[in-house]
Length: 438
Ligand code: PMP
Image (cartoon, rainbow, N blue to C red; front, top):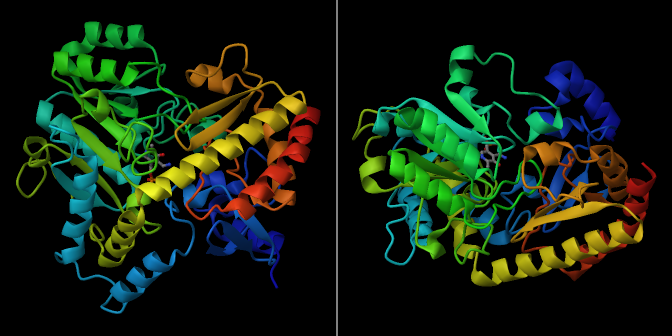
C-alpha cells in the first residue's frame, strides 16, 4: 500500500509541487498532502485507509455528499450512452432550465439564458469578455481578496490560493492586462464611488463574489451589493455576480444562491460552477436575453468549448439540482450552525481570540481579529494565520479533513448526519488548544 508520503514524493517529481491546484499542496499548513482515494456521504478515505469527515466537499460541488446514489446512477446512465459527442444534447437544456427556474425571482427576469462552460475560471473570464463586448468599455473593477478564477486580468489581489501563498498577483500577467483591472477594498463604498468618479465612462463591469468566501468568509455589509447594483447601473457598467461558490448552496437570501433578488434587484451577469456540475467539470454564465445573445453564434463575443455541456457532466448537474430540495438546504444550514457554534465555543474555551465569519451555511474562522472583525482583505490578511496550521493538523490527526488554508470556507453537505457532525465536535477542543499553543 502506497503511503501519502510515497505518493506525494512521486507526485512532486511529476507535477509542480506534486499537485494540479496549489492549495492542495498544504503550502500554508505544512506537512504532507493527503491523497484521497474514495468518498462516501460525508466521509473521505485516504490511500492508507484512514477515514475522515470531509469539510471541503470537493471545494463546493459535493452539496449532497460524496457518491450520492441518484447522482452516481445518472452518471452511469449517461456514460452508458457514450462520453460526449461534441453536439447538442438534451441534458444541456435540462440543466439550463433548472438553473433558470431557481434563479428567477418574482417579477424579475433573472438568468434568462445560460451558457455552459467547464470551469468557474472560464465562466468569469467569459463574463468579463461579454461585459466588454456589450458595453464597448475596457476597465474591470474587482475587490481585493475576491477570487474569480485564474484568468490573467482577475488575478490581481485575488483570494483563495493567491492569498494562501501570500502573492500580490501572478507572474506572467502583463502590465497591460493588470492595468485594466482596478482593485479596491471590499465593503468600501467610497472607494467604489471614487473609481466611478475618475473612470466612470470606461468601466465595463464590477465583478464581485455574491458573498466573498475566498479570503475566508466576509459578509457584505448591509446594502453593499445593492450599492454595487445602483452605481453600475448609473454609469452604464455591468454588474457581474460571481456565484461559483454560493450559487445553489447559500439559501439565506431566500433563494438558492446569494443574490439580492429578494431585495428586488439583480445583477446583469451571474456566474455559477461547483454545485451545478455535481462534482464533474461544469460551470456557467447566465443573464438577460439581450446580454447573453451577444455571445457567438448569435453575437460577436466569442466563446467556445470542446467539453462545454458535456453530457456526463450535465447528468451529474441535473441529478444534483433535482435532488437539492428545500430539505437539503434546511439540513445543511442547521448542521453548519451547530459546527460553527461548536467551533467558536471551543476556541473561546481555549482562550483563542477569533471571529467566526459566516453567511448561510458557509463559514470560516479568522484568528486574532475580534477587535475589528473581518470586513475586507486587509483585515483578513492581518489575522494570526499561523494558528491555523496546528489547528488543521490536530483536526486531521483526529480524522477531520478541513480546507488546508485559513482563507477557505468550510463546506457541509446533506450527508453530514449526527454521527459525522459528532466526530467534528469531538475533535474541536484539542484542535482549539493546538491553535492556542501556536
Ligand atoms: N469564482 C469563485 C467565487 C470561486 O470560488 C472559484 C473557485 N474556488 C472560481 C471562481 C473559479 O472556479 P474554478 O476553480 O472552477 O475555475
